[in-house]
Amino acid sequence: MRILIAPDKFKGTLTGAEAAEAMAAGIRRALPDAEITTQPIADGGEGTLEAVLAAGGERRETVVRGPLSDSLTAPWALTGSTAVIETARASGLEFVSPTTQTAGDAHCYGSGELIAAALDAGVTEIVLGVGGSAMTDGGSGALRALGARILDDDGAARPLGGLALARASRLDLEGLDSRLKDVRLRIAVDVQNPLHGPDGAAYIFGAQKGADAQMQEALDAALVQWARVLREATGVDVQQPGAGAAGGFPSAFVACTGASLEPGFDLVADLTGLEEKLEGCDLVVTGEGSLDAQSEFGKAPLGLADRARRRNLPVLAVAGRITLSEEALAGHGVLHSRSLAATAPSVDAAMAEAALYTGVAAEEVMRAYLSCS
Image (cartoon, rainbow, N blue to C red; front, side, top):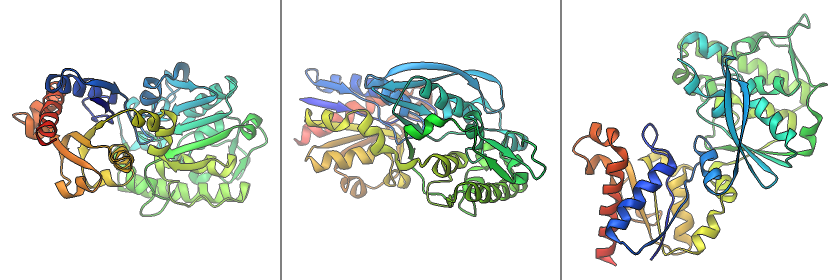
């Protein structure tokens, strides 16, 4: 039997690649002669780079400014003439101890430096995976790294960070890297939040970045001003679905480069040749940290399950926890599922030894499938 094992990350415990290897070990115990292919998947946020590298992408590294301007080395990938960048690798929350101050000061300048490195490599396409960000700066930091200037009423440059946008009055694009005109920018998004407002970047995602209620209000007002500055400079209204992802990062590039916002899983699936891998298999095993109601809105595992179902391929699922009903999973073609929470003696044990219990759950779900087939 030819089996494709393609999970997303188990956030906080296992990367997609680690989860895939743990699943493979369990499945081999149930079916020793299985022909197994592993391929991590992602929905366009964290894990995108890993998925592309696992599919044969070439790893590159660039020294950049982190979200609070500390120097760090950020990886990215080349696959053919396409560069794949995760904003989290340069501007991620992992590089910050979140406080109210960092929520206002954090920026994505380093993500712009990664884009510049990709342009230096001569690519014709740049795919940006967004998510896990520390900033709420509307992508302004990255624009500045690429030559744009953000000025106040007196013509002075504004500091980096989302809060500083409140006093931005003009965007000078004269120095913006001209090579951006010749490159296709594709931004992978898995949320539909607008840039500002009650469902925007500051109010929905600000708290996890350290923003209290007062800071969320201030950052939202700053993003309203940023949208006005972008519209005056480019004529583009950036208050649109998806522009609020990653602290509003897409808004700057939708306005200034014509970047497209695309469903994250579909974009990653194309980059990793997932359809070709599905063609050669008899069974698909997928999963992630939590299979829940959010999984039905563009998340990778059920996106993969839907593709497999259209090919009449059976699907099994393993997850840290599963709150979706069997009926809901069956609607995506998932025949059997197992959670680590149900397999391990406790949630703490499942977290502490995630690889072990992922393998156990995979073995159990495989045996359940074999007993019914």
